[in-house]
Length: 149
Ligand SMILES: CC(C)(COP(=O)(O)OP(=O)(O)OC[C@H]1O[C@@H](n2cnc3c(N)ncnc32)[C@H](O)[C@@H]1OP(=O)(O)O)[C@@H](O)C(=O)NCCC(=O)NCCS
Image (tube, rainbow, N blue to C red; front, side, top):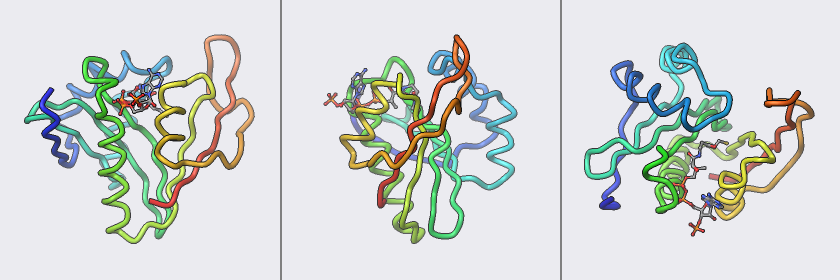
């Protein structure tokens, strides 16, 4: 882990790699089609590199001056070393340059690592969507969070 981070657009050629990690990171992972659709739709899709090795990826939808963080992932082997915080800071910088003034996301209340990262990064909880996510037993709410990039 060098901490020498770079970011590049995700392409269809990354999807084999993404799909080796996505099912390890989420109880209800995105399908390959979800990523392919995001690429076709022109969403902001990024791969994070640490000294040329891919260690993270993210998908954001930007509409005018608002953005929505749809997927935000650091591979298991690279977690808890500051990569998530660094990727979030980078994405916020990209959004500022695009003129985005509000960044939204949804997160499961049970996702302690993500909630801790977002709260530490300045996101405020602005609401709750009831039974938003599928869960192992029934459904789980989403916490809606917002920050100025
Ligand atoms: C959430 C995620 C992106 C965090 O990435 P990361 O590289 O591990 O995060 P960082 O090392 O930058 O951690 C930054 C801070 O987040 C919090 N955090 C991260 N992992 C944590 C954990 N397992 N438990 C508690 N807090 C955690 C801590 O406050 C941490 O700071 P600290 O290490 O100084 O205490 C990563 O765990 C992940 O990809 N999880 C699976 C996918 C996912 O749930 N994505 C979010 C969907 S909403």
